[in-house]
Length: 310
Image (cartoon, rainbow, N blue to C red; front, side):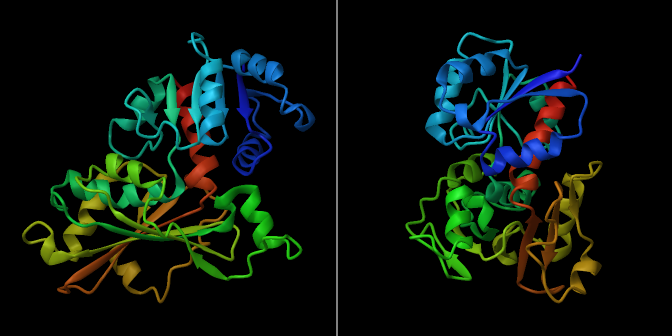
């Protein structure tokens, strides 16, 4: 018997990508609300409570409303793609490769908070170094990133693509989050196991999908004896035995003239690079992913599959 899946917010950017990924699957049945009926609260509540798994692709407040509609119905499991529950203690964080136990936590959870796209890259780079004792307490971490504009949803897509839009954006690249209080900082801090919030500087480029996340580090401020090679080895060890996150060999990275933010568009995987000069003073940790793949919809489907395997 196929599992019933309801995507609440299926007509948004993330929801549409999830539907595309499940279009040819026969092991799930998609419960759907017509776009014309998307404001029909009674129908929405009925479908939410009829599902085996409800995937919420909504703004924070709407996600909270959906969760309240499921209050007392423990038969429905939830994957929420908003920021509403990403640091909630009673929700499993949906980054399966974060540590060795996380996949099982997701598999057995009733409620899973899908990670943000930027935090997926940042946590993938930071947490292994914290767990290995390489990144010391209170290190002033900086996270610099650029995303494709689809990460901003339909409104930003329209602003970037429609020249007749009243708020059309002509910039090829722009920095935002200028007050340095971005909504993704709490989950980077908590799930990156950091003692202090990182300085996060996000930007958007004139490309639809793709992402680069960078974490530059001073080697002489890390654990004594840390080198380019030991940083790379810590990442390799952390992600050994799984296929979604790959760590590019140092010799391969050393030959690259550049890194392309669109390298993994359409894929649900992530690549990690360690750049620097052997014997040098710095390393630059880099994550490349599709902001709508491993950074959103692909991660939601991965989490759904883990939950269905329980």
